[in-house]
Amino acid sequence: MSVELRFTVEGECTCGTPYAPGEEPPPHWHHLECDWGRIEHPMPRPDRGEVGHLMLITRSYVGELFQHGPRLRQGRIESVDAVPDAPDGEITDDTPLRLYAYIDTPEGRWTWELFDAHWANGKGPDVYIGRWPD
Image 1 (cartoon, helix red, strand yellow):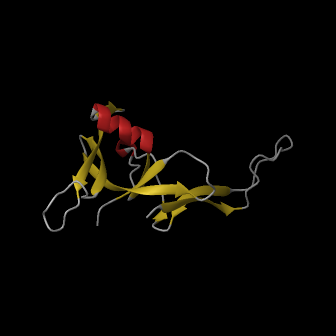
Image 2: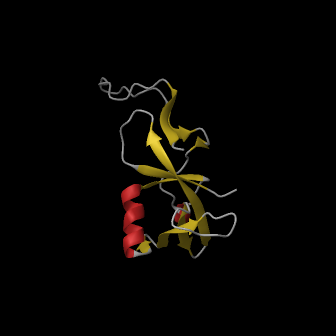
């Protein structure tokens, strides 16, 4: 399964259009979304109250966190973990893993389960989408 990520626009978008002096674009908003909903804060910042049930994390950053361990960044600790998904309790070489991303701050801990994601337009970095576990 791979979750499709899309950019959407609310309002009339005229970005990139040259404007005459004093002109401004009409009010509009760009959003990032998927079938699970709108991704309000792709890069979670608990210190600014910017945390949502969906988030994005690049595959390369997940690899760095696995290789080098948790990272202190902007007053928070970011980490990832892989947990065997063995409903019957038996773990073998073929047991699939569930990936999780964590942000720890003095205010608390946030957890997202990571899933494969791809961009609808085929462009953009390789990412996982994180969703708060149900």
